[in-house]
Length: 402
Image 1 (spheres, one colour):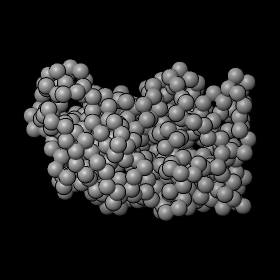
Image 2 (cartoon, rainbow, N blue to C red):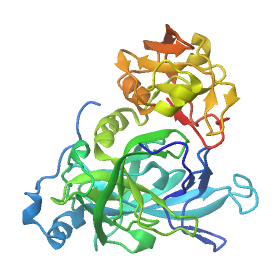
Image 3 (cartoon, rainbow, N blue to C red):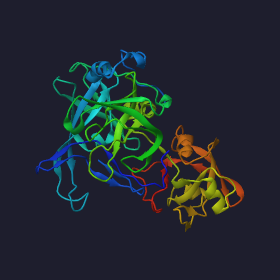
């Protein structure tokens, strides 16, 4: 998991955007989060590819490119924006074109891409290789996981579903292959390794996406929504964001992919209803170390220390307390230390999201926490996550959780 006290800049990769006034934007927009992270803008498993790849040792990058490439889509969306360079979100409506990537899930024409690639899209087309572009329908979008499902008429184009792997089995040092359309250069393949796992990035609406895969395979604006493959050609992630190093919009060798296991949970729900109602508690928390526990006189050195409780949230209604005194290392001290949620032990903030992921709005759960030295518990009725994460009061971040 990425340390929420560290600052980095990451960029969403979707789109070369060209507005009618002639300006060409390499990325679709900018979202400034409390973590000083700049982003540019369970159930059934989707059908695997019809030609599962063999052992990694028997396949070259060229082999994988030839077999997987035909299933990678060039996604183009006509969008309307009101952003201008002076006051984002204001100004006259401008039509433009955003481009990104995607890949085929099944013979029914379902295509997976990033939510931010088709955000605000009026018309969407996809193209595979040298085939003619075909119209695509946005079946559903989930900004909280940055996943979207498109669908094309399977009679209008030749479909090559990709085989989905298991992102839980990905290890640091494994081979990584990215195929997509960086800067509109379609059918581009790049290679590298898995450089880290269990990262945490911000979604387009400001909530955390956990268990993210980090790679040094070169990915750039336009790669958004394309597949990150393992050495056997199986999809293990969906390329979504890059670290820019503050020097521009291109790759500096650190990219982030949403794990395919997240998509396996999200896609069936999007296909069924077009959206996902995520459960929501309404707190911002931070991890604690042994040193934190010593300095703050905490009873244990694990858990999620409450930094902020959002007004009117389930946590506020249940009486969970936030901290009130900022320490020299950025923590806000004095809040409840959550150690159990819905029967699951909480070692770090990510565990909260994992604990409530199987739940739905309206479910009642129990939260166990230390207030000072006293171990307490409260019942919380989960709400539906708002469309955007509430502003965080703690400088440098903390982790906003559902």
